[in-house]
Image (tube, rainbow, N blue to C red):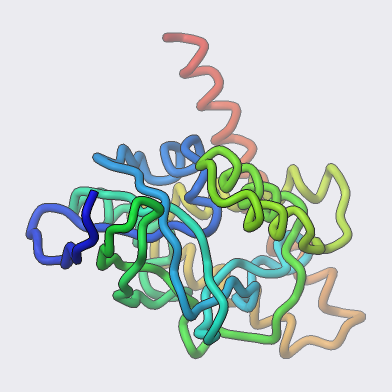
Length: 240
């Protein structure tokens, strides 16, 4: 297919560049009910992957973002979404509280140039880079392989370090994230965002001896809700 530029002008559809956990087909389907009309492998030149967005203390140290970096690149997939789907995706990403939208031009693996929207860390939230959780990094690694991205890029993801954790931490992290996404899609959106922001703030304002106890107490309800949602979804699936 010949090279050209496809601008973001359609009123009914949006191209989104997924470079993080939304590369996983199952993840984006369960996260915001996304059913892309088209999925296209692409590379963003002049940027790099960075884990500089604070996550959930004790569970998810950092989330992925992109930062400008001449000579570097980020691989991922372009998702052609309806406006309604993109709005659901935006809510699941915190509705602007954690990420800002940027419009970027990408080069597809087959030589096209497509303008798309991507989420990068909100400037007020960006922090020093730190290793992500094993659970979260695993989503990026499996998503890159499932999307059949450049083997060298996949190998680079496989070589990234992750924060020390345990099976219990990974399970609790997944449950907490599930609860946050569920609340973000409904009327609890504002509460969910303030809840996580307050959790993040404890890392900055509380002394180490008090911090972990407070954080455990704050995390527990979110984990419990996520586990309850998981059980409910399994029962619904078994009943079909």
